[in-house]
Image 1: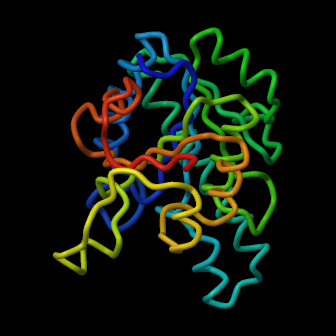
Image 2 (image 1 turned 45 degrees about the horizontal axis):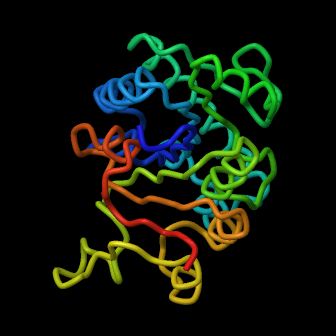
Length: 236
C-alpha cells in the first residue's frame, strides 16, 4: 500500500446516503468492506467521523441555541456514529476501538494518544469520537489534530464529491475540479475544503490532504494505495 498510517475523515452526511437524516446501514456496510480490505493489506487506519447526519452545532446555534451547548450535542452525535461504524467494521471482521474525547467509559475508551497508536500497531482501527472535546472546533480540525498526534502520513477526506472545485459543481455545470492545490492556495482562495484551522494544522505539520468521492466502489483502497484520485492538497 502507498501509506503506512492514514487518517480517514468521514462526514456525518455521508453516512445517511440518500436519506435525509440518520444512518444508512448499506453505506456503513460498504465503508466497512473497503476498510477491511485496506487493513488486511497492512495499512494502519484511524477514522474521525462527523455528526451532521444527526445534529450540527452551527445549525443548532443559528436556531437560537447557545453555541457551546450546540457543539456539545454535536459531539455526542459523532459518538453515536462512531459506535455504529464500529459495529459495521467488526461485523466485517475488523477489530475496532472507539476513543472518545468526552469521557463515557461504558461505550468508549477515553482518548489516549499512545494507546491509539498501540491499537493501530496491532492492526486495530481506531475511531475518534466527540471531536476534540471542546466546543468551537469542527471535526475537520479534529481530523487534522489527531493526524498530527498519531503521526499519520496523510489525511483522506471522503465526501460526496470527487474532489475540490473552483465553485459548487451541483449548482454550476462549468465548475472545474483541481487535480492538486497548495495549502496557501486553499487558504487564500477560501476554498471550502476544510475549515481554516484544519488546513493550517496540516500545513504546519506537512500532512497532505486528499479529497475524494467516498461512494466510488473501492475508492478508499485506491486512495490509500497512492493512486491519483480526487484532489491532493500539499505544501507548495
